[in-house]
Length: 150
View 1: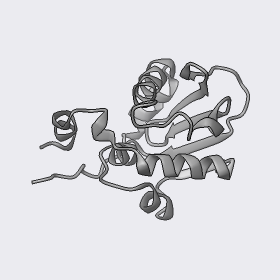
View 2: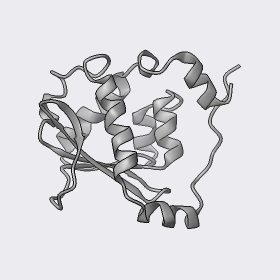
View 3: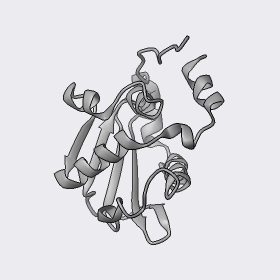
């Protein structure tokens, strides 16, 4: 029996604290996961248009903005003040639902729960890549079941 993630949002007070914390630790977790997936489930040649482009994942209910770029050696955090080329925004619950394959990017996008701002061509590339990723190839099934509460 598959249980779905419950609906939740990060409380406003906690989000205010999280938004003030250094963004490096969660950004390092994100780029590490992306680098683990790179060449295994994220084909580097398909991601070529992302090379050198600044991306931002904005976790709206947590007040977190994770900025990174794809370079020759994989994904890495960026700390400059240059604007991002693409900003992807959603709640923590919706990002987790994407990773767990409970929701698809199109459903979240058309229900306005997943927003992409900036270069629309990059946004389409990222959306299609997210839709094609087999996350179970990265995380063992037991870990995904644990996240689902099963």
